[in-house]
Image (cartoon, rainbow, N blue to C red; front, side, top):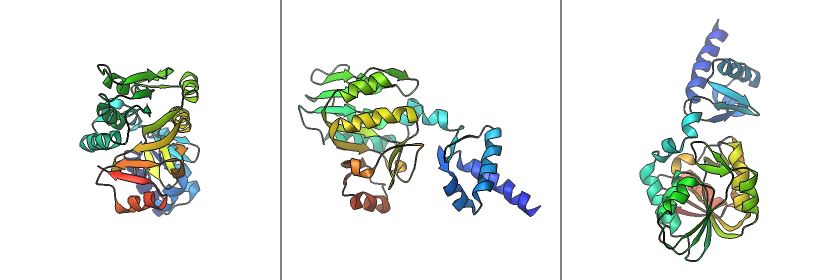
Length: 255
C-alpha cells in the first residue's frame, strides 16, 4: 500500500514537472524522486498512456506545453522587456558592412529591429526576421529558402542547409532554447541541422538568451560552449551561470 501511495504521489509530481519543462531525462527524474530508473520508466509509460508526455531516447518530452513552446506568438511575449534590451545590446556587436546571419526566434527579431537601418548584409531563415527589413533602404536581406516550419516561421531542411553551406559570414546571432555546461540545445531536432550549418558558416557566434534559458537542457544538442564566442543575456542572469560562461572564456553582455 505504501509503495502504491509513493507511486501515486510521484506520478502527480512528475506530471506537474512536465507542465513546466519540455524535456527531462531518466537520470534527473530518478535523482529528483529518489526512485530507480525502472520505476521512472513505469511512471513515464503510464503518463504517456494518459497523453501527458511522449517518451524519447533518454527521457521524455511534454505534450501539454509543446504547442506553446513551438509557437512564435507565444514565445514573443515571454520576457519581452528583457528581449528588447538584449536585442539592442547584441545589435551593437555588429559593424557596418558586415555579413550577418540571423537565426529564428523572438529575441533575434528584437536584434533585427536595431539593425534595420544599418548598411549590412543579412542572411536569415526566419520570415519574422526578414519582415523587419521590409522597408529598410540600407540592409540587404537574403532568405535561405527551404521548408517553412508552421507557427515558428523558419525555413528548414536540405535547401536551407545547402544555402548555408555555400556562404561565409562575419557573425551569427541566434537564439536557443537551453544553455547548460553541456552546451546549447533546442526543442526541435528538425531545427538543429540548420543551426549547426549557421555556426559553421561564421567567424563569430553570438547567442542571445534571456535568463530563463540557462540551466535548461532541451531535447536536441546543438553545440558545445567552446563553439560560442559571446553571450548576450539580461541582468537577472544568476552569478552561477555568469561564472560558467567565464570558465569557458566566453564574452558576456548583460543588458
